[in-house]
Length: 188
Image 1 (cartoon, rainbow, N blue to C red):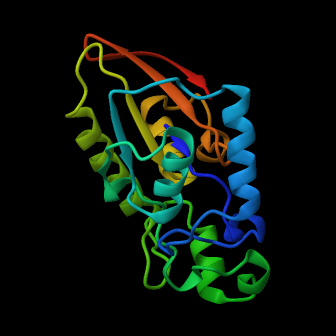
Image 2: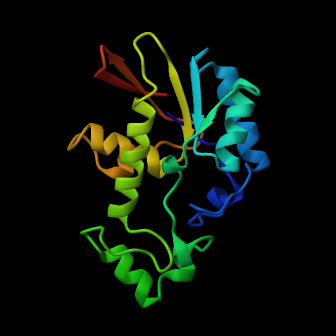
């Protein structure tokens, strides 16, 4: 599972989930350097993305125009009214303070998702991904930091928190399955 490269929203530290942004020029350059370093798997049998432009573009840069399947359930968190805004611009809003203070994860962003709904959606997406798993087949997913962190937190409860699982742009986690069972993980 690889997180897409940087976008202008990442560089400006804006909440960006449902907004369909392309990679920034800096993000493209960083991906090219990581690819040159050889950190990515050399091949895969099946390719998946969230379907959003930044994930599609990342896959194209790393592996060319390979056949892929879009799994929209693996898209980033929908921040609703908080999309494309920073913590600085939102910090005085009561609805924002209520959302970031909600430890239960049940409160949605206005016009967006709750953390609980996001986790359910991503779990469903991961389930769809597992339906394609067969022994000896390598699957490669280009998705989003929040979705990847959500999957890792679910698979390895208590090992790290959500934010510690979230990979940097262009990085991710390799999961090793054998006979349909998760055996190990390692960072990419």
